[in-house]
Image (cartoon, rainbow, N blue to C red; front, side, top):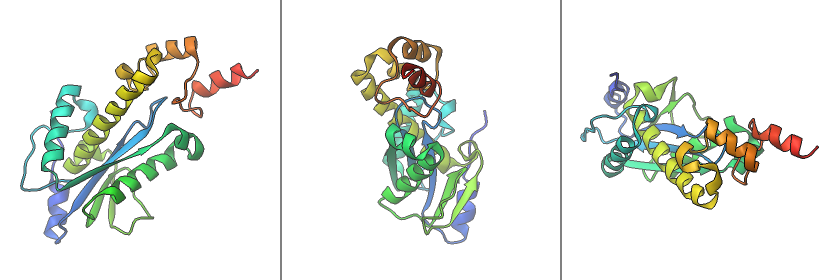
Length: 207
């Protein structure tokens, strides 16, 4: 099994950079609910076994690793961007906004940012854009775990408000069951109206 490593963080530390933040998001491709980004500054003196991209972990393992990360990290934070904002500004801008806000929410200002596929002109902190960073970089993988666990918690809460759709199980993603529930009940308040098939269902309902 391939695991991310700390080579990039160590390389930056040798240049005198102390606080290195990994940043990632969860929920970009979901049909419903928010996008959640997380930023994590790992403590290089405290090792955590098993960190890897959140999509490769079972839910109980993600939760266990989240607890270890939250307890041992120098700092961590999240940002939540609602489905209404996603519909208003588009998923790409919402993704950028979420990650920017997660960095700005950190109680410790990072000296350098390692981001999964994005960098931020609006933030005056050096940033490396790492494609598939959650597979390669430990701090980004840690951020992916934090973002995924916190978003799953939010979707579980939303499942209680909108129980018909099964959000607790599929977290808003485009499963067959989710599609069936959409066809039966139509979109609810937390569905992303600019995403298919929600957009199509709304269009035909207005004809």
